[in-house]
Length: 117
Image (cartoon, rainbow, N blue to C red):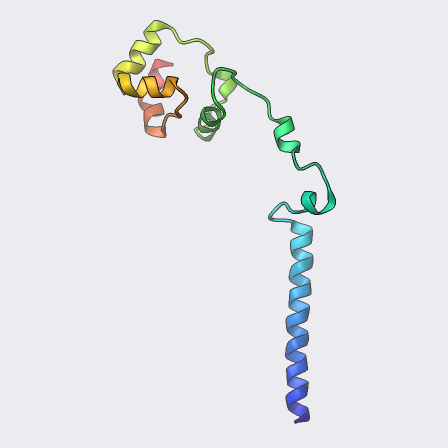
């Protein structure tokens, strides 16, 4: 019986040590960003530093351009009638109207209409 209790408590000790070690690692690494919530840090620092790179684009359109590797600040702020005609030719009247209304273009649409910019 003594051997059983020894093994039982050693296993419990190893489990407890592993849990403590995992908690310390998660506290140091903070993979879920919980430290600002726990310690009252500035949780809105990212949104405060975010600037509007192009005021004519919605936030989702700017994020879409950034995922394609394009700086939204370099996108022209006005579209000439020739550019719009090119977009209509490449994407279609209905899709151009949707994008002008705030919808984000897909990657395929961007590469189709890349020459229009």
